[in-house]
Length: 306
Ligand code: C5P
Image 1 (cartoon, rainbow, N blue to C red):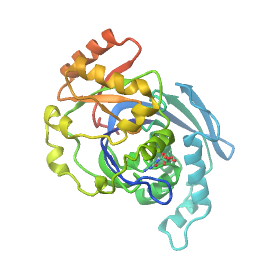
Image 2 (cartoon, protein in one colour; image 1 turned 180 degrees about the vertical axis):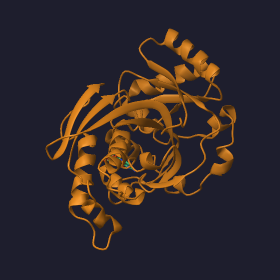
Image 3 (cartoon, rainbow, N blue to C red; image 1 turned 90 degrees about the vertical axis):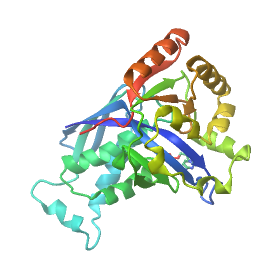
């Protein structure tokens, strides 16, 4: 069984004051993009998850979110809840959370704010749920997903959603009107905890940041040049302190493209939006020529997936 795991961007990201548990309350619009890792699932004789990795450097050990997702699902199935419809599913002829060999081919850069590890974890949960015929409903998968990371549940419900809480409360909305995104990844990543720490140290949190919701339905109908000026990422100033070169790079890109460039998540990836592919391709050509160190990819926003 082959599964594609799409990356995401945070089109809009507002961040409130740190909660008592250290996490920050968010109000964010997330959307998938046409940049994918691939998961190949095979039955294995043993119990548990065996992982092999290919592509961009990613640890093939139990710390990998793919292993943690598989093991969390196995643990959940070992303890069916009292009275749960799911409790009966394991007694079905060949449904059981047994073993699996997973090959992960990584293309989504790490430390880029594109949710690559989270996408892999979510697609592992959904894929193994089918592969092992467990029939867990999406809300049960989401509860497991939330234990793995704040943005894992989004990837069970994309391609376009407003996410609140620490990111785990998902409300699907229409996909944005612009169909293309120019993704620009510098050759360095940003550490998410370091960016949130800098956000606190700089005193950037505001209690009301997450209170006033935009009219999402109006926003989803706007073309790129009207939508871009409305989009905000409250983590940008913090990420630009953690990675001093990132803010300067964003300014140079904005000048070269004559267009607003935003950061995704806690960085380090940057993006801008286009209404059609020809514009995105032309912009990519300019950046590739002038900035040879950057990874530059025009990708679909909210691509169709099986
Ligand atoms: O949930 P996740 O493992 O992705 O979070 C990584 C780190 O990012 C957390 O340990 C925390 O420092 C920070 N974070 C946060 N508020 C959020 C999400 C993440 O402070 N809503």
